[in-house]
Length: 296
Image 1 (cartoon, helix red, strand yellow):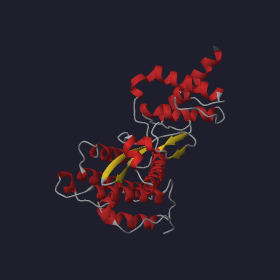
Image 2: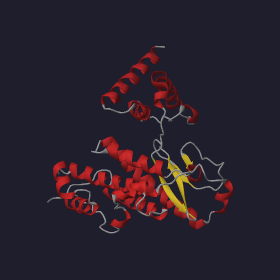
Image 3: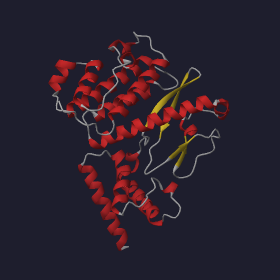
Image 4: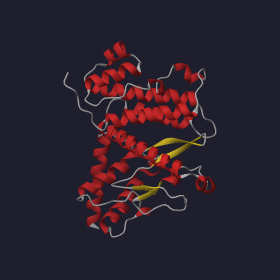
């Protein structure tokens, strides 16, 4: 009994620290898993009592205690989408939405056409990450289509891991960037895809990312507004001037977008969505977790 009291005190201390850091309720449990793991010598702690690990008695017990503690304190307030992110894959003319799941430690992502195959505790079958894929459709996919899907998944995974790192580092505009990504997902729901609105959200997301790192480089918000405005081209050039990492100066048409796109005044297609997504992912991956300032 005394041990449980001490454990609860540790959980309370960690939660209070997360509150002070401004971590939202919906994200605290995920953050606390890592904190508790570090406190106990980096013992592996599963994310859920439903996915306990073999030969991991201490980590599994901590998982159960921590899950119960957070459930008792916050209950339904914790409900949230725990995915790292998402991406779209164009297959035979159609856009397919794929989740990029969150995980702790390492995870082996693989492709198996059998949708009943989930993988072990530290494995994930990518084919199960699109809820609309049927077994019959998956069976018809070619090796080339599967290879393309794997490449897209890897690109999205790397991009959203970097975005997650930026969130922890609290770069400027983090919440606004997240809002733009949510807008993309909403506008590309299967039953009512609005390519114009989604394309605009991609453009806005790219602009905020570039401005966030220019602010980190010491450029004032006033100068950003007066000198660069909303020009992706100018913002990329400014980034390349202030950082060692060099963004591509090609294919600006893939990401630039006029405000009229929000009102269906421009004609966009699913191909425009894929091009904007690829531009955004390549930009995020080039910037990396923490770009290095150049000597000017």
